[in-house]
Structure formats: structure tokens, C-alpha cells
Amino acid sequence: MKSIIKSAYKRAEEEPIETPDKVAPEDSMLKEFVEKVKARIVIMGIGGAGSNTITRLNAIGIDSVETIAVNTDAQHLLTTSADRKILIGKEVCGGNGSGGDPRIGEEAARESSEDIKEILAGTDILFLMAGLGGGTGTGASPVIADIAKQLGAVVVSIVTLPFSAEGMKKKEIAMEGLARLAKSSDTIVVVNNDRILDIAKELPLYQAFFISDEIVARAVKGMVEIVMKPGLINVDLADLRNVLEKGGPAVLTFGESDGENRAIEAVDDALENPLLDADISGGKAAIINITSGPDFSLNEMEQIVETIVGSLDPNANVIWGARIDESLKGSVQVLLVVTGVASPSVEAALQGEFEAPATLERTTVPKVEVKTKLKGKKTLERKTVPIRQAGKKRESYSGDFGIDEL
Ligand SMILES: Nc1nc2c(ncn2[C@@H]2O[C@H](COP(=O)(O)OP(=O)(O)OP(=O)(O)O)[C@@H](O)[C@H]2O)c(=O)[nH]1
Ligand SMILES: [Mg+2]
Image (cartoon, rainbow, N blue to C red; front, side, top):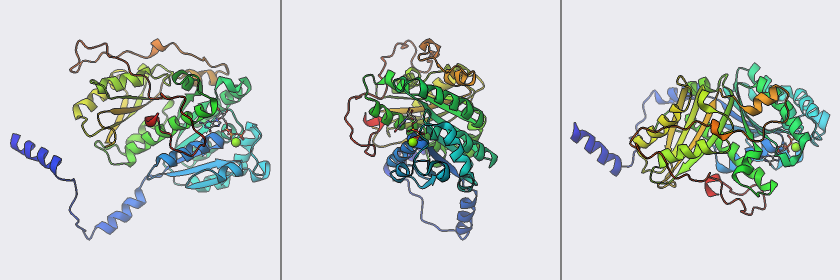
């Protein structure tokens, strides 16, 4: 037995994993069938922020999904990089935006509902992205979410709340929009932009928006790729649908480490991330996406999953995927999305309390005692969150600006 394992191990190391080039007569029929039953995952960005995140997503690169930008602003749509584009509300906005009024954004989406229906037909999962606080993203998103749900799609909304520096008016608009969108979405992930400033203080606003785009783009990519890209562990679409259907309020976080105890440290880093503004101990389901260098072991991956599972509801439905990225030598990155949490932002929005708590007691993030191989080593050196060089200069939106480069 040992020799079989040994020789398999050796072959895995020596030989490139290539399947023999054989074509069975059934292959063309199978191909057709696969095409027919293939999941349709759509990522849609609505309004200026949503469209910018779509552009960012396409700059990072994303396969096997369609990206669609939706806006009332024709000029902005023209500069957006997307597979498809819809200019909504041609009558009501004349291609000039909504003027910051969510009622106009809503009307624009209603005016263009046939175009939206047409483009979304046959969608299994819709990821909807917007920056709340303006007119188009805030007003049109709930209408689009409703249309997608009527068409049978699972709707996952990932939205940002404005920076406090943008003023109270925007916050109010955003919170009203959030309440509406939360009701129309299966899962709603809220990224509170102020949290970004917790990570990267002194950041000029325009740069903070880039980071906000990056976070949302990376999160969506991470969730989608868990099913669309072959990895070490395969998750199928039905699993992802299960987690996201009626997932309710959700939070997302990232962690990474290249330290000695990188698996545990990466989880620790994710749980310490200021983006995580809810208690995940009651989390009903989670998606974990692990990306690591080729030297990462299965044991370490299990450590990550076990540690996260240990910090959620004992009956939580957890799906996880792992992929090797040759460029990540010696390090590991973890993306975690937890659904069914008590999100303070969503709760505040639903209760009509528009002054969402700016800070949440960080003690609500559960500390997990790690048993595997780390007994007696509970005090690990903490790494700072992945966003570091806050002052890095950037002139235009479209350049490369990844979290991993920061
Ligand atoms: N992530 C990100 N957020 C942005 C960006 N620009 C603005 N925001 C945020 O998104 C909110 C809404 O702004 P926009 O997306 O420009 O507004 P809109 O939906 O296009 O609405 P109108 O322009 O008023 O029709 C703002 O209050 C900001 O918090 C951006 O480039 N990236
Ligand atoms: Mg706009």
C-alpha cells in the first residue's frame, strides 16, 4: 500500500497532470448536454459604483460568468468594461443619470424592465453590486432584484454603504435603499465603507473607492470561482445555490498569512478584519475560498476549515473550495462569506434607524481555540489586514490595483 502511495506521489510531482487526448464518439453529445445544463451566473453592477466594480472585476479577470453594467448615465456606461450594458430609463433620465434621486433610479429600472427581463432570462444566480447612496444603484437595484427573483434566480446583493465623510443625506438614502434591497434579495452582503478607513486610515476618498471596488470584486470572484473553476476541492452549483438561497444578511471578510502557522493565522486575520462587522457565531452557512501556494498541505486546508466551522453555528452548512496559485509561494489567502448573521447595518436599515452604528464592539467576534497541532500556542502574532500601502498613488480607475498588491 505504502509503495502505491509513494509512486503516485512521485508521479504527481514529476509528471504534468495531463489527460490523454482521446475523443469518444459520445463526447460531442456530452458537450452539447453540458452546455445546455451549464449554470448561468450573472454579475451585474448597477449605477456608477456598481459599474466601476464590474470594470474592476474584468480587469482582475473572471471566467465563465457574464458581467453586465446597468446605468442611467450613458457616458459612464461607455467607459465601463462589461460583457453587456443596459442604459436604463432613457425617457426619464435621458442618459444623464438620476441626479442622485433613488425615486428616479427606481423609475428608470421600471421603464427598462423589459430589457432587464430579457437579459436576465435563464439566470441561476445573480450577483448584484451597487454603491448605495446615489440615485441609480439605490433606486434601481431592488427593482432589478425583484425581476430576477420572478425569473427564478437566486439573488445575492453585495452593496456598500457610503463613507460618513459623504454626509448624512447619502447615508439616509443608502439605509432606505438597503431596507428595500434586503427584502428583495436572498442574501445581502453589506460592506460599510467606513470600515475601509478602519483598515487604511488617512486614505483619500477617491482611493478608498478603489479599495471598496476591489473588496467587492474579489468577494464576488471568490464566490463564483468556487463553482466555476476546477480546484482541489470541487463544489457544485447546487451547493452554492443552497447556501445563498434565503441566506439573509451576510458578512464577508478576507485574511492572509505567510507566517509559520499560516493556516491559523490567515483565519485569525480574517476574523480580526474590520470588515467583519457582525457576530458570526450564529452564522447559518458559509463559503470559504482558500487560495494558496503549491506548498500548502491538505492538513493546513483542513485546519482553516475546521477553525472557521468551529466559530459558526454548530449546524452551519459550510462549503469550501481550494485552489493553488503558483504566485502565492509560501502564503495563503482566505475569503470567508457567512450568511444568516445579525448584521447591524441591515437591522438598523430595516428598523428605520438610519444612523447605523459606526463601530461595533469587536469582542463579538468569537475567539476560536485551535486544537489541531497547535496546543499551547494560542497567542499568535497578528498580521495586519491585507490592505497596507494606503498612500499608494493612483491616477486613473482602470489600472491594476489588487488587494494582494497593496
Ligand atoms: N466602490 C465604489 N464606490 C463608489 C464609487 N463612486 C461612488 N461610490 C459610492 O457609491 C455611492 C453611490 O454613488 P454612485 O454609484 O456614483 O451613484 P449612482 O448609483 O450612479 O447614482 P446617481 O449617479 O445618483 O444616478 C456613493 O455614495 C459612494 O459611497 C466608486 O467608484 N467605487
Ligand atoms: Mg451615477
